[in-house]
Length: 149
Image (cartoon, rainbow, N blue to C red; front, side, top):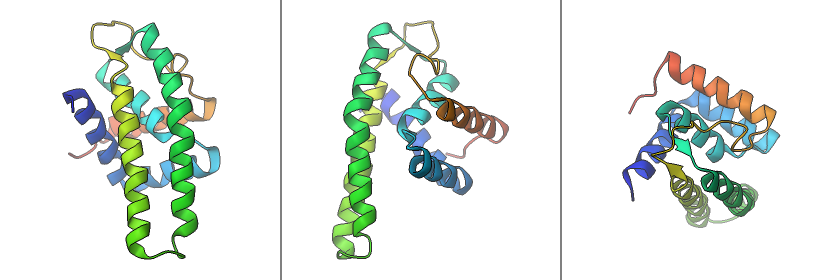
C-alpha cells in the first residue's frame, strides 16, 4: 500500500473516530445517499493540496459508479441481517463492507497526480450541493480542531 493510500485511510479512520462527525456521516449516508468515501477524499485532497489530472477525474467517476452501489448493497445487507443472523456472520458482513470502502479509498488515491498543480475541486469530482456543504462543514470542524492520530 502506498504512503498516499495509508495517509488517506488513516484520515478516514480518524474522522470516523470522532463521534459527532461519525454521526453526521452516517446520517448523510442514510438520508442523502452520500458517498462518504468520496466526500472524505475531497476534504483530504483539499487539505493536502493534491491535484487531479483530467484522466484522474474521469477515473474517479468510473470508480464511484462501480463502488458506490456495491458498498450500499453490502451495507444494506448488513443492516437487514443485524438481528437475524449469527453475530459471526454479521461481523463478516461488516468486514466486507469496510474492505470494500478501503479498496475504493485506495483506488481513489491512485487518481491523484502529485505533479498536478490544480487542487481538486467539488465540481471536478462531481459532489452534489449537499455533499459540498457536508465537505465544507467537515473541513471547518477539522480545521478548528484537528483530528487526533
